[in-house]
Image: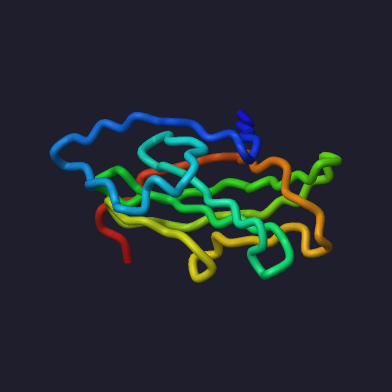
Length: 135
């Protein structure tokens, strides 16, 4: 299943926090949600001039589960003419952990030639529970 979110469309999403879930962070308002599924919440921030010239996007992954998970998906960036760039994302997150930014491979400037990002989407999304005891 492919989900697309057009940049510039802001969604207001209500959240419910159970007693074992992590509390909201003071910067959560800045992130635009893409999807939450199988306990993995994916959101992004769009930067108009990420390198002082080109559009960029940083993705944040938050594991809302008490157990560690593995994840895999492709991020698709489209310009105004619907030309696409795809980036593979995969990794692991500990229970209630988070990943974001360059160090976690979650920041991109997909069109370094000055084209604007028109859409950000995901495809091939998969999340799985990791064994409690790992080597």
